Amino acid sequence: MPTILLIGTLDTKGREFAFVRELIEANGCGVLMMDAGVMEGMGEGADIPPEAVAEAGGASLEALRDRGDRGLAVEAMMRGVRVLAQDLFAAGRFDAVLGLGGGGGTMIATAAMQALPVGVPKLMVSTVVASDVRPYVGVKDITLMYSVVDIAGINAISRRVLANAAGAICGMARQTVPESGDDRPVVATTMFGVTTPCVTALRDRFEIEDYQVIVFHATGSGGRAMEGLIRDGYIAGVADITTTEWADELVGGVLSAGPERLDAAGRAGIPQVVSVGALDMVNFHAMDTVPAAFAGRTFYRHNPNVTLMRTTADENRRLGEVLARKVNAATGPTCVMLPLRGISGIDAPKQPFHDPKADAALFDAIREHIEPHVTLRELKLHINDPAFGFALAEQLLGMLEA
Image (cartoon, rainbow, N blue to C red; front, top):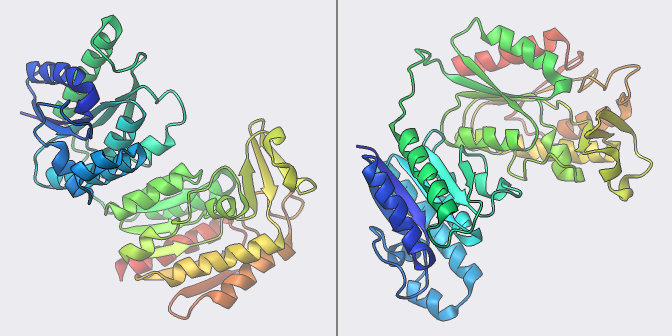
């Protein structure tokens, strides 16, 4: 019988959680209830009381109540549910997780969900998921259901929505995944439209070997997703061809993957080959959204909602320093490969971002700052020359086989 972990604040939503618990149990599933509320004397029926959640988060429930600081309490309970959810899942105590909440409850429940591996069914019913959901989803497979009305009482609308949620999580918990028969090790790679030929050449080479290749679109969320799967142990090796997200992080574009991009593979000690794909560009939305501070720069209108800005020599120099610092910290076999004749599809002769001096600043900074334990290979090829993608593949294959 599958067991559903229910996470929420029973101090304000006890009736609603009791209703959902009954529906889940009537559906033939067990329930493990975790109460992350902090108000005194209003929650009941929890299998894991708020005192245990607060303690797991390094706090005292009594002290949180005395302080009366809601933000502090939410942060403590977020830490607590993360720890407990991971421990309970490792012990085989539940098969899926369901949360109900408003702003605070959604932050708390999804904090637990983000701590669980990809593949564990996760459903959040919330009043706030009709807006920007990035803080709640992170890089995990969290399903969001808008509650339409506030989770405050059982009425004609909430009854239907909560019943749908109970049915959905029970169905997900029961669903088996068909065996694919493909247990080959997984290699991750990163791609943009302007580096697609390179990635295609690499994939073609790997297809004749005993590896699966998973491609991540380097749009911020893609880079974060790859880093998360590396941390979770899914990835055997990385061909990080398109490191463009660091240009957005450094310069202020809209597709940053955050300052931890390029950390996970090095920390995991898995083989990685890193290149400089699309570090010639910073991403913005439509042209009228580009900050005024960038007036006079070189732009390329990729489509009506995507505007690319050419990185300067100074920005490329700093990007080279960042990349070198990241790979220098790697604990496993690492190689940096430089395509000396262009780093994207629009960085080539007669293309709008062709700027050999800016590229040279990038390459020089990498040469200057990279440490001897990291292999550096320079090829007189464009990044999208099939020979460059093939060389990347051969380099990584050799490292994996070794």
